[in-house]
Image 1 (tube, helix red, strand yellow):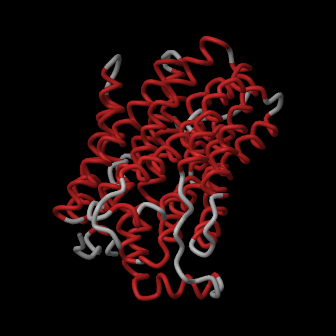
Image 2: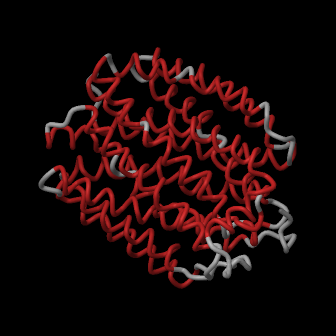
Length: 386
């Protein structure tokens, strides 16, 4: 896709990035608190995987139709209402008295997360100018940086004030939303108001469905591996005696590394194309994850950083590449690469927990570390496109 304007509207790109950051900041609270939820509700690992998996399942269900609606109607309801649901309901999770209510709070927060992702991602292209991949990387960085800083914040907050104090954390997010209400623009939509969902999908993806499907499969596999690690690394190291704050630091390093590598990947893709960056990142993911599992003591922090650096580097590239192939359905393309891929990958997370109950977390994560190498064959099928 060729943007209508050659210059990058930095102010709007940063506003959209802030929407992404604040929504994912609160959405990141659940995973590092899993050890506390396991202890509070006496959960097994399969149930712990269910907490993580429910948000992925709802992303699978909610994001594609929201992406379809966002390409048809210019409204800020999805972009602003979604983060608001995340902020309120995820903050309430700490006071859930029973397991099913915890799942309800996580579910509503996850619906909110699924509402804003395709809408806001679809708004990047019209304001990115010549720097589309880099602008998308900045936007994605907002989310990955949120998943890096959010666990640090919530583990410190809970360690200082207790799990029951989490509702007070929503005050920060509400203040940010008041600012975004004044600064976030109304989305620009494509002229598909008179087309049904199936017709819109055919028009958007019909000529390019094969390469888009290949990208999607790569993103699903990447999503499954990264989500399994983010879900069960806290449980693994909690069982080995690491403190809650230490676990939050590992999760933060994993995701902050992804923010850094996403920017680098976007910068390189604008210059040498998507395919070489995909190949390099996925080839190096497997050894970095083996490295994490082999390390002990404080060296695990370095392993967490390297694992996140490579496994999360291609998140913005998958979204950007799909949007360039299907420029008339930017939000639908975004929902395909984020919500649908994220959701399908996340639906397998409880399976990882079930296998970990049968064998051990460390053995299962070792097996999962080999999976990114399988994507090399899929990536080889991608067209050479800048």
